[in-house]
Amino acid sequence: MEIGKPTVMVADDDPAALDVATRALTEAGYRVVLASDGRRALQEALNQKVDLIVMDVSMPHIGGVEACHCLKAMPKTSKIPVVLMASKKDPASRAIAERTQGSVRILRKPLDPGELVSVVRGLARPRSLL
Image 1 (cartoon, rainbow, N blue to C red):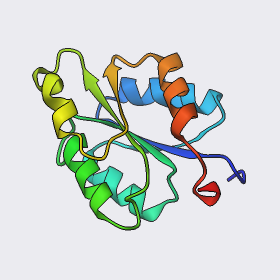
Image 2: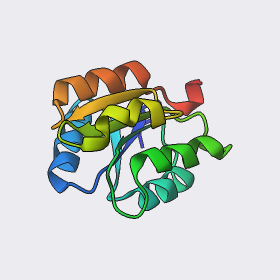
Image 3: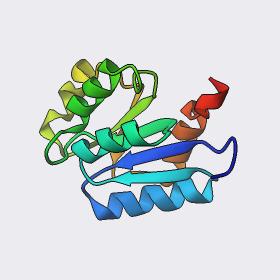
Image 4: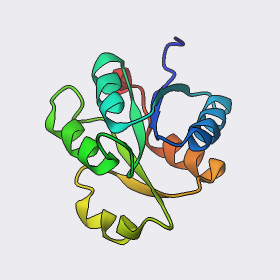
């Protein structure tokens, strides 16, 4: 791993969204870690040095909002910025802002690669620099 290169975890059960995010972030110079559901995202956040997490709200096992709450409750992961993604068609997306304790931003899906990179650029800092 390149020293000083931020690591971004992207958690989503949609392979197409994972692909878009991975390509955009890799091309922008980030190391990317993937998780296909909220449970896996929590495991990866505990096992790897992750500087920022981009996570879908609707995933199997543990959704993004619940995973965000868990991350913020654990000392090892409490300071990792979390960006949530929500589909424009998700009926719960209107209430997400009220339930996203600990997240720093909400992105709408389908993801705009430029917006994703811009948001990540503004938030992701290697933990060694924090």
